[in-house]
Image (cartoon, rainbow over all chains, first blue to last red; front, side, top):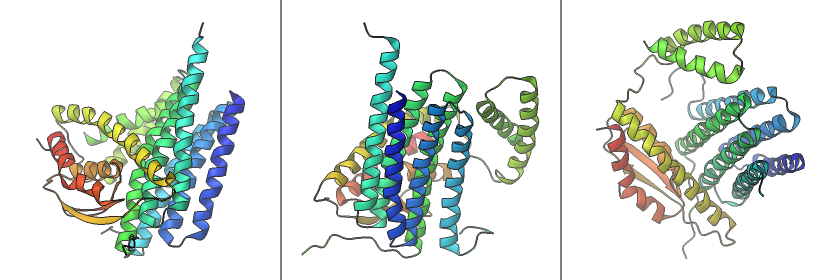
Length: 91
Length: 106
Length: 157
């Protein structure tokens, strides 16, 4: 079963690298942010798989913080794209 | 005679296969689809389901432990945040005037 | 009252994260969640949080399986489009007006559209939803107003 989870982790990492091509190619800023967001989701799952394979529970906390940061980064980036600033009301 | 562990492993393999398939579809969609809006379709739907089912599989494999609850919490986080960030990105694209790809009808 | 609610939720989250029932851990978590609960009630939930009656909450719980089923169907539909070599899409953005009165209904509607096969909420202005569809047949389903009626029953009765 451990080999199976190693395979899953490698599969997800290969997927993440393919997504990295979209972040490189663009063509617009939103495409790049979307690609980075997707890579973040995949990394989160890889971290959870590693936590199970290595038996290190702390990696799950890392994954949780990673997921929350991933969300905040996307929201901040879109907000900056729409309004050009990060403080004040979002209208 | 089928053992309890065998049943658990079968469930895990099926759920992981399901999730991995949707992750693959999300990646192919992100590369193949012609414009940002359709890529967001692939990204939000397939990746949410893929992450959700793989994390559920990990929790099932782990059994009744505190860390399983954490894995379910991770799945819930992805389920909530992924459509929201997809929507935020689509809104930013729409408000900055990004036009959508149209089929050429000749 | 709002501070108490937020503290209870935060304490439950703390229990999930720490995963231990030591007295020191519990006391530390209790202090932190009360502090953050008071802060959150002052800043994050400064405006009214959505209040659901017991009947609405029950309807909402009944709505969740429908949403999960829709998620699987829509992911399969995207898979079908993406794996087809011809890639049969004909995207369209349409505006759709709705009669919702509450913010919570709008949020639920926007997320439900995103999880419905072939559609994605792009923008919301007052009560007009701009919806991107992978083909016109998908946005027609939204325009028929069935989902809208369903959410009206859940949140606005």
